[in-house]
Amino acid sequence: MGLFTQIVMFVLIISILVILHELGHFIPAKYFKTKVEKFYLFFDVKFSLLKKKIGDTEYGIGWLPLGGYVKIAGMIDESMDKEQMKEEPKPWEFRSKPAWQRLIIMLGGVIVNFLLAWIIYTFLLFNNGDTYIPSSSLKYGIEVDSIGEKLGLRTGDKILKVDGKEAKRFNDAILDIILGDDITVNRDGKEITMPITAEGKKEVFQTQGRNFMSYRSKAAIAVVGDSSIAKTAGIMAGDEIVGVDGKEVIYWDEFRSIIGNSTNKNLDIAIRRDGQIRNLNLTVPKEGAIGVQLDIEDLRVNDSYGFFEAIPAGFTKTIKVLTDQIRQFKVIFNSDTGAYKQVKGPIGIVEMMPKSWDWTFFWSFMAMFSVWLAFLNILPIPALDGGHVMFLLYEMISGKAPSEKVLERGQIVGFVILMGLMLVIFGNDIWNIIKRFI
Image (cartoon, rainbow, N blue to C red; front, side):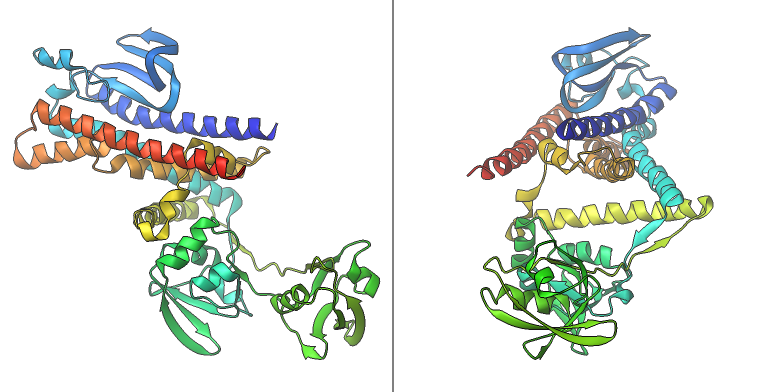
């Protein structure tokens, strides 16, 4: 049932985004009296699952779920309809319209994707507010694992800046570090700026960034497992660890490290309970765990927004997501980071979906993916909207349209590039599945 929910959620999100993107082309095309021959969700290679002709347009659902398209008369696109282009231009064809109208038609899909994200983020902020952890609330700094250390960080560091910009939010700082070039921290009272190495980023991407950095907490116990070594020794929920074998312990990472390195050893544990210090004795089992869980201090805050406050905040959020995605491209195309190996296709994205329905995730993911589609489609690659826009801008600036041969060859080159990228992405998905069974 969980996998079914994941697939349904992914297909629904993609379907909505594709339909709205294509509507972004369809509506201005119809407004400028341009004939739209087809409007399809997914691709109808050789045949379609459903189709119905209404007026001049055939509406349908294809069998190949790799996007969708509108086929506009008199336009060199993925259909490569050369026969139509050999005929004399008709008034209702794309090629007969002024360049500025053609530009609006081609930009329509990207504009809709951007506006959709803005609207979703506006309503999410209005309904849910914005929950985050202020960096200033991390009294004890950060805690990092071996991956975080390879980035140059140390447990106890306090993050001040990333790429020279103040790190106000701990949540954002994690992504900024992965995408950034340098980081400034307060370490033992000294301000240190250091580069974020590609080698360190490679380690992060290989583990998909799992918990390489969290915030540091005191060694306070929240849960003691039934029949655990800790419970037998007398440790209780609410206790605070203050020492082990006469050595002072303040932070959870210190206590965890001592326990992990003391298998089969007898330890004297000093705890603070109700303001008094007590000493307890236990032997660490070979598993290196005694059955306790950390009392995590909830440092999150929530900023609430009225509707009219949420509108500019939603726009700012959309721009932030767009900027982060542009920065991700820089990291992905740096082969030293190995980030390209973690690019996910449909299979990988389905695995990211929650196994039970979550509307907040649904809308958040749709907004993020809508921005992603807008960014990808505006890239100046022939066969994408950005490729058509590139040729149109050339025509508007030079006063001369590119020849049909140039447009056809550009479409073919763009198609080959896109197919190559899709093979790499699908290959990554399949390889990641195979690795689980090796």
